[in-house]
Image (tube, rainbow, N blue to C red; front, top):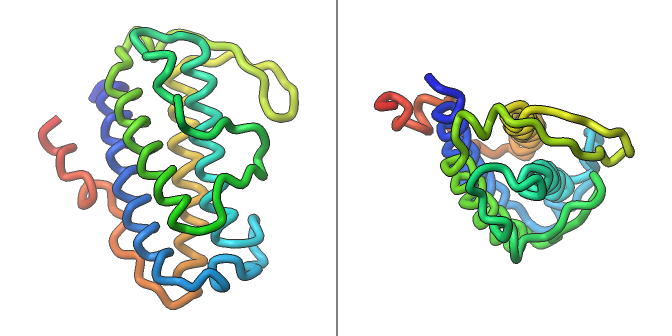
Length: 180
């Protein structure tokens, strides 16, 4: 499977997992969403905001480097990521609006990038001020790994709340991968 097709699958998985976990999170009260978790991020809402941050900053780095046929305005109307502790919304409904739009943008970006685009290098500064040069494909791989890592933590917290977040298996959530 090509790297571009893999990223297409990952973008669909990302969208479906986020929808699934948002639906589950929305069953919690605001007090539960803001309750101290004693985990890496203080609250469930903090996890959702950090997931937004990770995607926004990585996509911003790619888009700002004008890779391939990417529309430079593809992120227009979405928040700009600045720090790892950015808060884009505290009500879960606000997070859902941003997350739903962002997940569609991720699919759109991944689907317009060619194998050639994924092999291009970009240079950016990290939030710590370090300069990094990396292939676009590696930046996307990091973004998808970052999502999976923090969603894993989030599923643990949802389990501790007694919630069933459903299946997380890629082949079940993205049956389209069988035809690619």
